[in-house]
Length: 373
Image (cartoon, rainbow, N blue to C red; front, side, top):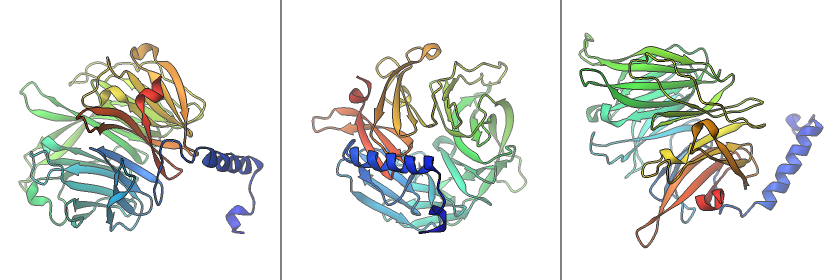
């Protein structure tokens, strides 16, 4: 017996037994797809799930067959984050895969050949989160080293190391999640409104603009802090922005995704968050269904939240009075990711599904109608 298993509390033993029983009871629920590790990030594109896995790999998984159709190996630590960018900027092809890892690097892969075309030692600690702003040809990374860094994704720089084009170092704890939207100044010049969330529960709001006055002729992106929200008290697991709303989910004894409406472009107004949704166990994943492209609040007014090993479904028709609908069981360990899958059908229509990822090492598939009815 290993030393770590020599002394264990009664509560731990009971939890292990309960999980073992659940694993057997729910082994076929949600048509599970088993992974060779824990999913740390998931992106859905068409009928495929792109998964960052703790086994130092990223993989492309066919959601209809459950088979891995592409495997990306090269990182020396768990892969924590995924993003996509255009091979030809502005084309919208998103044929290049970007991965971040515990090995502190950011790699860019050709999805046709699965070859690494760029590798950058990006941070001094784990890379935790990535965000691409296609129209600005900009990659934003957040790290356990408490910094946010900006990288040039212009086509001429997608070989070798990515050029660093700015950074922000204002958080006192590791960065966990990023979200952003583009706005315009009075002169019509687009600039980035960036949300950065850390493990202390702080969300900072930045106005990020390009400074073309740098001496080396390479524009630098500079962030100006416009607001700071401290409504959470512990780690923020995920933030999701869209349609003027920012959803955030945290970990604590009482866990609450909170709806925030971002300030105006000049941040002249300090707005209060809507009432939090509270529950007795952690919300580790937040999915406002209506924010997905092609869906809206009228037809899909649902919020799904991963709480412990369950998926909780809420009606968000009125953000001031969010209504709990039901709880869905299926995983035997914490649900860490929830994503929309619009499945392509043979008749040309698309069915609305939700993909869940869990610390039990599986992806599972749910028809939204089954989850909400």
